[in-house]
Image (cartoon, rainbow, N blue to C red; front, side, top):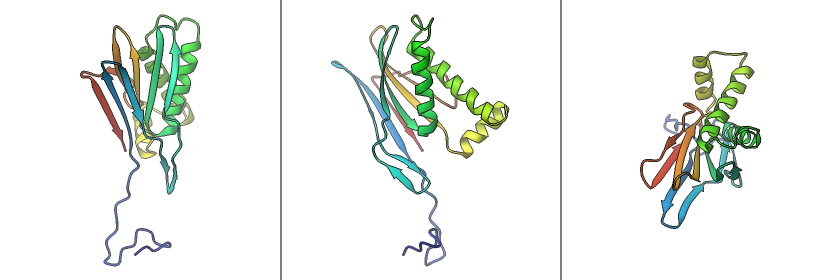
Length: 171
């Protein structure tokens, strides 16, 4: 039974817990290259969109990288936008894509802190969690062979996959 006035209402007094949106990204290193996949659904409040672009191809000084996004699109897109700006900036040609991604996370975190009246790091973490703004990026690229790195808004430090695959679920 669904009650549009009280959507959490249940005939026996039970309420369903709120379902959090989930987003997935996966990277696999094969003998032929690297496969990277991301879902395309974006969920907010009661709305959904099924055609969000969560994969982006970026050229940088040392080659090309494919970036997949998971989590809050508002923050993951901001990070990738900053990453594209950093890649094109002077002096970035010798830096790895992972280092540039860490710097892009920092720029996004700095912008969020500024928007929250220069809040402390602890206040920023609470703000990110309370507003479900966490996100992660998966970076597929070649650096002495095929490589998959991940970086999150929460930690901002890139980590190389230890095996031939990496999966991230956020939600």
